[in-house]
Image (tube, rainbow, N blue to C red; front, top):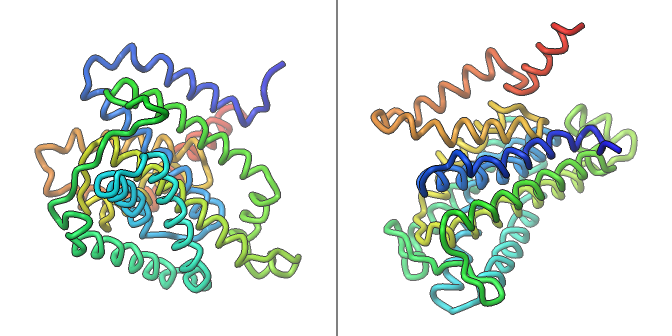
Length: 312
């Protein structure tokens, strides 16, 4: 018996993750694959907010950075177990997202974008200025991740951990999308007024998905800190937030597997821009503009639509 159709893509991705090590010939290749997986997990959560609920966020790198620094500070300065520090990061980010969501998510359009941008900038500034705890702009060293006495070292071990977490995050997202919560989010995206008329508590669902997407970012920020062993406030800056949003838009808003493709493309892209690094921000902006003009639904939904048109 075949699994439900929505899981076919998940099985294909699992197969790709299993065979990809055959083509990864050194630690650098594994490192790139790990960062693709990390970005993909973050944007799977961000897509729930942007693609399904229709709420823009230009500050999600702040949640990523806050999760990273919470783990880093608690493990490096206070000798907390990494798993406990990760959980503390989730609680801190979840509470912050919940507290700011109610006033912020009452805004719409560019007002909402500016509010989330401001939130992300505040977090980034705090991480840069509180050098007593964070090391300031120079960053800080973070201990490796250990779990039940097993210290996770090496790119290959991290590859399998991030690969499994990517599959888990997509599975959770697909189930949420097909749940009553997902249907409520799509109603909010379609018409907030109409959703309220039929009895949907739009503010409640927007806050819920904002918190969930922030927690996705926090968890991956914590794991990134332990994987890389060193973090700086750059991970929470505005450009990182723009990268994440661009991955969602390029891959396809409201397309879970589309945003994974977006993360794959835009994580690889800087490797090809090493000689023109000073133009990287400009190139990301150009990709965002061209995508909105020529691929407004994103890469994967557009390709699927073209395939249906040719087979019709």
